[in-house]
Image (cartoon, rainbow over the protein chains, first blue to last red):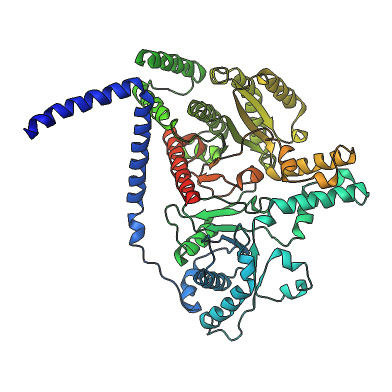
Length: 276
Length: 282
């Protein structure tokens, strides 16, 4: 009895489907699109399998890095990273402190950490504390501890400026408001100066704009590392990234030393022609 | 249904053959139909409104296959036409390509001359091509024309004039362009407006700067593709791409870029778009 019902049911179902798809051909295409997306997701999952077996080693002391440093021909003076989390937890701040220590060991002079909403700037003191404690452990063999100073562009125009030259590594916390908004501010001040005839209209050029934007202490990074699986600059200051190498590892959305190192290796190998 | 698609397809191949007689073209009718089928499926998902290309790697491609640099640039031009056609088939409204940077004027004189010659001859040809007519493409040239020679400027004006009434889609060709120059240009025009008392200093904001860029009136850039495996923006559309834009670095030279790679990028874009949409829901 059951089997005859099924034999009746299946053809009816097929006929029904055929009628539906005949009347609404867009449904087939929608279905095919879903299948295509599904298959592509599977393909990407397949590609990410080897990443699971990758052993992520996190160095705990400076001497472990010397082997990696040897093979790099050039080091970015200014390294920028996209902050790897939406919310700020203690754990992430410790990771940031570790990253700063690695960067110092490799000879980087400035590290900029970009967090779009500007929440990270509120944790400036806590980050400084973690950097101090992590670096004491990490760089224990060095005779003199490096001074690593955390600042953010909005706080820098105060008297600290002279001190910054003395620190071995400057950690710059930047956010979306250091991007377009700074260009708007600069345009306003420039306009005022032109009206007050402090500067001639014809003298407004790229160099002048660049000089004025530099006041905000956001230098051009040579390398930008993103720990997410796809690149979305998310409002990173546009003027500054015109020649920045932007590094990320597809399908690997985690913060790790290995990505940091891969980024530096890639930078060391890249060859900028400056249009030539 | 099928007869219609084969008909359009046939006319397209013959057109292509007439156009690039130097390159042997094989009649890949079946694969082409398959491409069109895939495009039709993808069109049911989210399609970006505005896409940008940094067409890098023509010279290295020429070196790789042992031909002259000029030939490499020519192949690059043909590839641009092909990719433009795919984009328009997908329903993308605005395509912006980086053809020549201000920095590129530093290159050896013969190469710059060859490129200028290519631009002079091909620009008009591009504006008369089937693709431009079929999709109603308005061709615009973005860049700082003060670096460009007088005769080329005339050609550019003529080309822009030819297609200025087309309003279904836009091809922006960035020529003698850098993004910093574009932003500076925008800032300068704002300064001028304030000087002429059209606006006040307090009226200056992000929107105003954006409206004074060369790309004003275009929808926001949603995908930026750079070929040749380099991982920098090289001063291209900085203002446009640093917010809500999927940046993709493709590891092949521009003349090797293919429809497969293009469709894969669109798929990637659609999938990642889905994920971010889910995030905003919860």
